[in-house]
Amino acid sequence: MTPAKPPPRKSAPQGPSQSNDERERLASRIAEALGISREEAEVRALRELAERVAPEKPAAVDLAHFRSEKARRPRSSRSRK
Image (tube, one colour):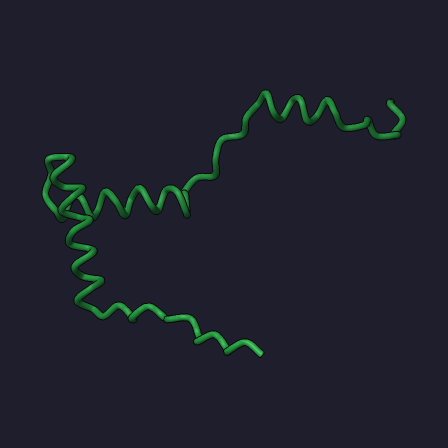
């Protein structure tokens, strides 16, 4: 018999200081790259994320795609008047 493998190591849970440090580092990095304040960088990052994951307006319909899909559909068997 082969010896049992030890259970996989779990990463240490992130405490509040670790997550705050990461937040500060990311916000500072963005702020420096854009030449804006750290607070403005956070707001811009949140706006961008919100637009990606939960847009206020649905994406515009691609008219060419809509027409090509419509052309591919079989016509209904309804009689014309």
